[in-house]
Length: 175
Image 1 (cartoon, one colour):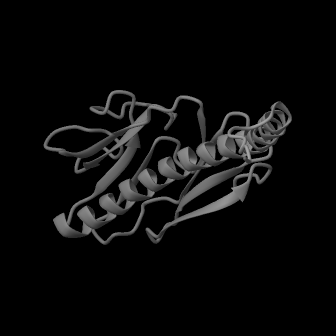
Image 2 (cartoon, helix red, strand yellow; image 1 turned 180 degrees about the vertical axis):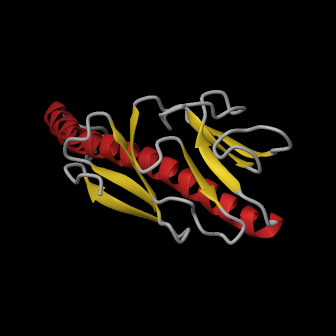
């Protein structure tokens, strides 16, 4: 009568565990970079969405609409960082300030405080005229604070109001 062994030997088990360990060691750093890049991409997409909303609402309402940095989602003030969040609002009075009959259209809160936002142009707001054109050009770079070996995302608003988002190297300077 033949006897069939069921199960694995100790050597087979050790080889399997070693292979799984090697595969995990190679995939964990890649997965971390993948999740970090996705976080930056999500914030870039939210910024592009907010600028597109402001531009389309300026055209639809035939009045200026602004997007500004905001810590509380209710006021712009003199916030100079986009790290805490931003909002879009109708902007009839003082440019970049919520006053009078201005209406907040939407607010975005950034929950990832490890991201860095670098800007050129006006430091805390972009205003779209009723024609859909921006009153000033602005560039915002979004990246991890330790951007070594990763890519950052750049959102650019031109004076004509066009919005672009692209990937740039961490070493790339703002224009």
